[in-house]
Image (cartoon, rainbow, N blue to C red; front, side, top):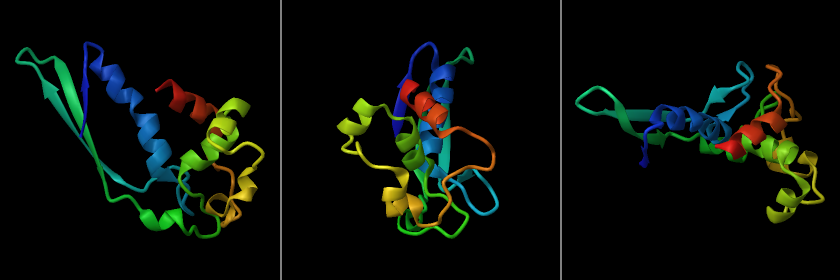
Length: 131
C-alpha cells in the first residue's frame, strides 16, 4: 500500500487519480476510459473527523491487454501519453527518441490510436508529470 500523509491529504488523493488512470485504463470497444483494474481506497480520519491519511490498493490488472488488443481498442493510456506528451529530452531519457507510436506493436496492433472522448494524450501526460 502507498501511504499518503499531510495536511493537504484530499488534494494528494485526488492527484493520484491521473497516475492510476494512465497505467490502469484503456480504450475498449464500448468505453474510451475503461478501468482495467480494481482499486480499493482506505481513508483514515482523526477523532475530530479530519482526513489524515489513505492507502490505495490496486488489483486485477488485465495483463492480457499488454500483448493483445482487439480492433478498435487501445492499450493502456500511458503508452500513448508518453509518445504524444514527452519532450525530446524525456524521450531520449526513456530511450524512445526517434520512434513513433506506429513503431511499437504494443500500441499499433489494433490500428486505433485516438480516443473518441477527445481527451488529449499530450495534456494527460502533462497532468501525469505534475502528479
